[in-house]
Length: 447
Image (cartoon, rainbow, N blue to C red):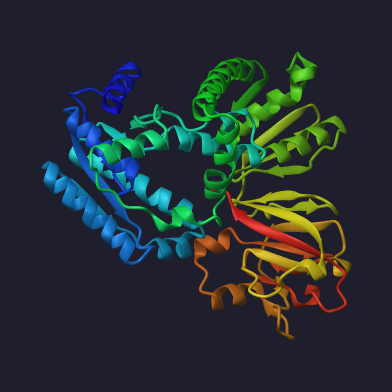
């Protein structure tokens, strides 16, 4: 029985006890409704937290009603909060997923402080972790990204990580547990759903025990990452010095030359958030003695100083300027990643192009391009217009918040703005009926 395995898993991994006060995060979907049933019927002390992000109209309201009625039937406390998710996205410049995630976790921790909850239980399960493995693999992550979803981080626990989606559904039907289906789970415009609905079913056709084998693989990768983390901590203590908010990494102190790049990646990625491509380029610059060139993560800048890597927080007046070479596939700017594709112009649908995609005539571009934060005095000719406009005025007209302005990047060709990233292309670089090759750039939020 699923309930027996649930109790065994919770005890085996010391996720919580009968003395804990558990805040269950319940959406109304099958996973969280089953988790509620398992916890209540196992005799744990629980309360329910439900978030209504007001993104699916009546569907969101009906989810809220189901969770409240079920909690009332169980006789347990239910907290509900409605969020202005769209307004928060406009205020912060975050993606919908990132804004919703930040809002709900901030609220969960607030509820813990106000009402004495010691544990926050999330209904992620084995298949969610496998999907995360593939998402991170496709994005080119290192080993850390292949360790799936952790069963416990601080007071957050995931007590269904032993179970597959199929087992959870079967339990719900057997116990007549009412739940609601989120219609967005069937949309293949999301990468996770493409993997869930497309790749994983094919894998199961090849290997029926796919989920359990992948779960075992992820556990082994997690153990390997824990071992590496310990080793990297020891190496960091030997090769790095910190003074205030400045970290100096002495490259020549890394004894094993064959693993030098790996050690640098692990330190810069885990401690300062640098991505793999950026670390690769930094290591190439170090090998070539390219002193002074700057490399950026979301919050930090790194540069080469003789045999050292210096890492400091990004200053407010730093333009975060990097170059984009012809044929480069991606680049990072702030909390976003840009993907570059060279395409035949006649293969592109130029109608209804979303703001996070730019289509530029490649013959009108001068490489290398420059990507940087916008600055006062920047002007461009917005697509479809003839006169020049200040970027500052354009952002004001669009009612862009101060927080978003601080994160706004521009892409330049020979000092001329080709794209106010994620918003508007420059008219001088638009596609025409004479365009042969186009540069398609897609901007995706990372956080």
